Image 1 (tube, rainbow, N blue to C red):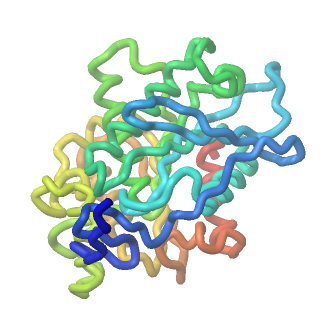
Image 2 (image 1 turned 45 degrees about the vertical axis):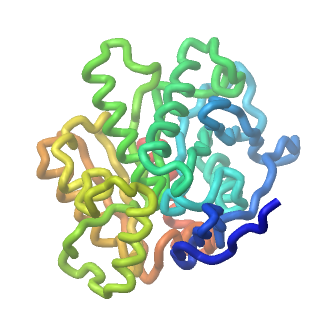
Length: 322
């Protein structure tokens, strides 16, 4: 067997390296933990295959001890972050956070394992995420393949959420849902109650007021986007810059919660998203909540901090319609 060529074709620190032989070496987000069916745990979890080809799966989280006669629970379809290139549903970071969120909010969480770039550039992540949403909707009659959803999921109260690139996905799933609902009287079996966009990965070719202008910082965010979507014309592509999207009126819900962090390079994009949605003619409401003194996805890095606890409480209130 020929020896692998270990010379580097492209490096995108601190995320990954692409070798000249085509091998992708991910430098972070590679740790994995199994799901838990521990009967003493406050939340049960398991992995379920949605599609063998393309390979799409979900990790489900169910607050422990519900009975079939208990009131059904809201559903959060969650898309993990990682710039479209790293992390998985099996990451201990996401597993622990979503377990805690499921317990605190008393929701069923469907964490989506979508294909990642650069091996599978966009729109693979969008298409996989939509396939997972349709799979959830297939349980609306209570006759789907997954018992947890049949017995415990209230599909009239479904939320799409995610952080960073996952928040980008959640936004576009909301648009796709709205387009389908408006053109298809039967829908896909769910009602979309709202979106949760945590530190969303939005960008643009031109800096916003107060946005970072340092070439190195902007180059990293732009490089990630070009790696994820090599056919895009740039960072004014509507998939990364909602302000350039003429289809925002299609948004399929009336409530959006955006979480931003004061020290996050994408902070201004979160606030700008609120302005764009309000000016486009969409009739819904966008609420923005900001964590002072914090950086990108701080809640995943330090979930026990005061600001992280406060943010989780805000997510819980949003999903309980408070």
